[in-house]
Amino acid sequence: MSFILNYLRRVLRRPPVIAFIALALGSCLVGYTILYLELAQHQSSSRVGYLQFETDNIKVEFPKSWFAYEVKNENASGVFYRVGVIGPTGEAYLAVQDEKATDFIMNRFNLTSITSLIVYMVNDTFTAILSKNPQATLDFGENSTMSVLSLDAQYSKVSIRGVPDSKGALHNVTYMVIAGLKQGRLVYVLFLSEEDKWDEGYQTFVIILSSIDLRRWNDETSGV
Amino acid sequence: MRLLGFNLPEKSVLIHAVIGGVICFIVVFLISSMASPILLQILVFLGITGVMTYQDQFLLAAGLILFGTVYLVGGFCGGLYTGYQVQENLKVTLIIPGLIGFIIYIVITYFFGQIDLSIIGMIYGFFLPLLGNLVGAYLGGYAMNWPSEEEKEEAGKLTLELPK
Image (cartoon, rainbow over all chains, first blue to last red; front, side):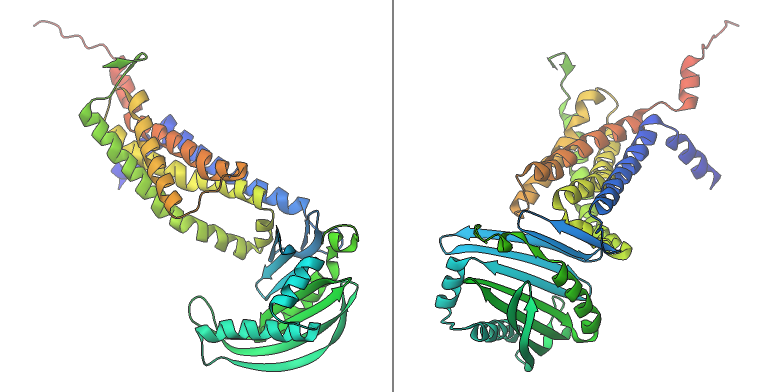
């Protein structure tokens, strides 16, 4: 035992080994410092424990334990803009399309109204789940209207039982689709959460939704 | 053989350096397959997964953490083996394990389609792994061949053999 300790003591005193340990620990420390500074820099000024995600298109606040991303696609069919905010108690997706992209979506799927769009989206999601679990069931819950992102939107809340995850375990998921039109531009928001986490997740979702500032949406001259 | 003032390594030395490179790659491959999920679990545990939103800075920070925990360690292990087998011309020989480990890693990464050609992607995917493997290999190789205190004392002593 003492031989091993003596050997280690001799080896650990060698300058290359000291440099190796210092470099390994130093780089981890610098990496963690960058993460910490990034968190401090994007801390929300109005809500404790929330971060701010700000781009040319959007400003949104979300809890530290969630993360957000944005995707913008521009092609011959129009401008499609998406933001996803994902966390431990739910997933929220916001999508905005310009007039051209809205017409494209409505024509392609033969949709005539926001209600038909919501029904189509729910069915589309359920069909995808059915292909993975044919025993899954869908229950329509609430259907109503709400004011969101300064427009009167319609929403539908459904429960889907038997949603498989990547490991094959089944979950009961509550799914909400909110959609509305403003000057020919379509905006829709999806929120889904496991049934037992719904209350906690929905509270966070409402805060996230209320913090959204869709800059391009409010700017009448821009594409989205 | 000499080229640009350096002695080129012999065949047996090259073989050991290549084996060192393979060891470097295997260690990098094994640790990196565990390091990313562990890093994610640490972020989840600390409740700061939100930091992943700021991708450029997050990639830079994650790259630095992986530099210290994966690439440097991989290079060091490859360098230890090469340094154990080879005692001469280390300055040239120890480039090989780091480079070979890096090249195999990049080829595998390319086939898995994980190469990002943005500036941050190049730092994260090319520069830090290459630097980590090279520096690690040198440190490992020299750690193996660094004279210990006792050896230094031995080298400093004059031995006089007096005729009887």
